[in-house]
Length: 260
Image (cartoon, rainbow, N blue to C red; front, top):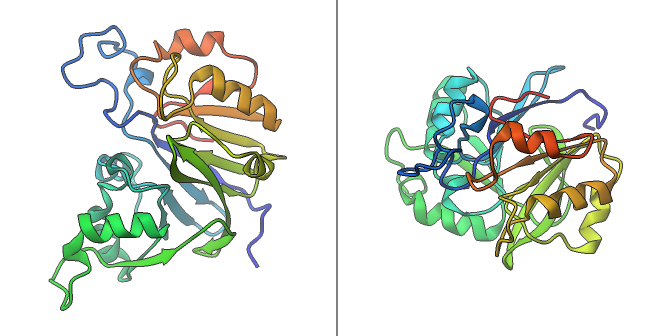
């Protein structure tokens, strides 16, 4: 059985919204900032258990290849996908490198809706007979029940993204939720007794499909998590240093490269 108390290292590969920060063609102060904390790739986190080296990624967005190179990742045991939007799946083709390095197929855990998108967007990877060099992917369907990936236990957290079902994930005392503007009451119970909670917080003004910073702060406090970090941040949030200085104790904007 997996050990739920095993130490976990979390690296924020990207903390930006679907267009990243800076945004193409934008002259605003945030996009023009020279502070590296204001440079945000598309959102993703890398989970690593130092005890045995197991490494799992949540979401493979358009920046997946660069994120793997930047963090010098040479092992990847599984991929968890939160949902089917392009800024969360577009880089999946680059698991080919790990297929080659590890001489095995890549387990990918996702919902049926996300599987449908993968088979459409990466149709060449699933055709028979297989074309040489395509990504070798084994799809594992998940629902709203606990599952194991690469020997590690995960609890899905069902959230809503303007009505679209998006799954967050909890492992041990860490939970990660992106692209949501609603967490059903019964799902909030899965967020008790956390050391670290990561929530999406797009900006300060209201949005149709994402939590605002104020909403995310309130949910973090409601769960009682010891530390709360915010991700999937747009250029409309404001400067990283200025916003962080205004946040309640034990809460912070995450930034690319942050390791917990």
